[in-house]
Length: 203
Length: 247
Image (cartoon, rainbow over all chains, first blue to last red; front, side, top):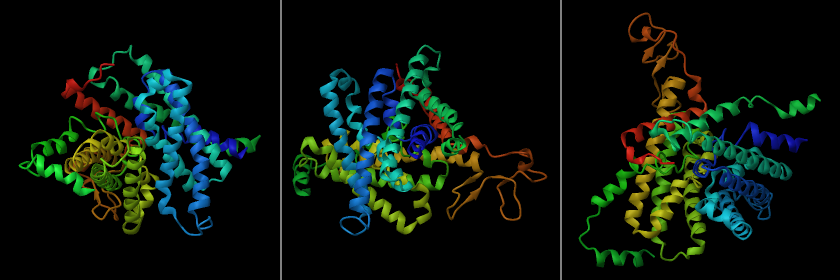
């Protein structure tokens, strides 16, 4: 139940995009149609879900004082984390190219850019800062990825519809996307006071 | 490495000045027409959350200028040695090293700000501007130009960051540079401990016009940063219709 709470918290209450503004670049750039947003969202869930436990193992087994080397190597954290993420993204890229060439071409440059998607590295850094356990880190990774997925689908759907609205020319596209994200952020804030642990305890 | 890249520079173009027109353009364009945030939409990720106060934003901006400039320089120096397939990893290692330097420096010299910025310092690694400039410019140009280009983009990013932070802090908190040695209190009700430039508790003068003024809590929320950048884009594109999206 504890794990489920972490999942819900990461996906809704502390949504990576709408509460922390992580992963904004690809979120804004790839959200023009729902189909591409869907593909990218799935890729992000996958990469987050995989990198989070791997990075947990690295930071506990290699970098901490109780680890294999027996000394504090936390200054290597950034380099190792980003190396894991980059190689995982490479893996996803190869899988997507094999399984769905159409999705591969439509994602284009943004697939390798998952590497520099702040949500992935940010998730790993949050995991370290919040001192999650191994299983909790998996739940956090999947929850965070699911939240990112929901957010990008939502904005893509809104942007598809808003094309038929009469937006001032200078605000079309990017400007409107920013303001919409702000509004969505405020909407998601209404979930902020909810404490999943208290809800389950009440039952 | 430096010798191999420096030689063609000397032999091919001897008379080029160190800081000519091309360099000036590289430095100044990112402030307006090719601004990383409002035009290229890069690097919004790590930044928005730190803009609620000016002081951390300035620190963040300096850090990004440093990382952006020097990663361009170093990448450009080794650009002919990097195999194409692993170039992203090489770039990331260069960036991550620089960010680690920034992080350790901050931790040593300004711990409160280090705590406040927390994970966002680490997230400079994934700041798309840095990576974007390396891919788009530093991999194909000589070190000095790449360095100037990196600096220009870092500054273009920092300027937007600070504009957003100034608006958010004045309206959200009534101060400027809160938490730094040069804190200025702009607007609010003065009491025995703090004085404000515009004192809303005053009986007469400018302050009395603002009687009953309260800080705008919307500005403290992260969402305010999105609204402000949206409006900045709106203003910029109204003046430059060529930049308008067609889609």
